Length: 253
Image (cartoon, rainbow, N blue to C red; front, side, top):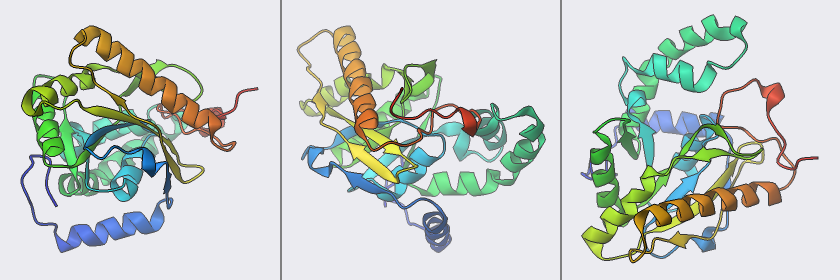
């Protein structure tokens, strides 16, 4: 297996055991629409579904792949604060002490898993340049890369709005390879144990970057929304860690 720096690394026997246990106790996902994956490496863009998305993509994404992972989840001292804020901060307040304790308990395991899995560390500062360079190297080496670009602005009952700076990877990839990078939408439905892969769109290096950034972002959000709405009736696991009673259905009305 290759690590996020594009260099080969040995997979420890302990990690293999941990990964097996994660597989054993997590939903068993099936992918639908694998025929939509391009022959060339692609950037797979998916809804996050809290902790389900990264786990499902690590275990069930077809072919060789790497997954963007928050850098804070890869360092034991930063896991507790990030995990609580990202996974549990919007749960009922009376549960917060329990979840804060849990965030410290999982810190050693989380940092171990994410440092041994096929991950690329993502940061919100100038280190994002390293994230981009590593992503391009993985793509050049023939692997797909999975990103989860949702942020706190709700778009509809299926997804939250996407950030768009990750799309700039296409420009860097084109400069390095002379090839147009594709972006492939994927909808993850934990309550159906399904990952739905849609049709890709390709970056056009001849067009204005701002325009391409907006076009690709809108295409991906619309396609993932359509994949979610057209799936069998189910409860959507949203980006934010809201109480389960507030989880929306994929079909409104």
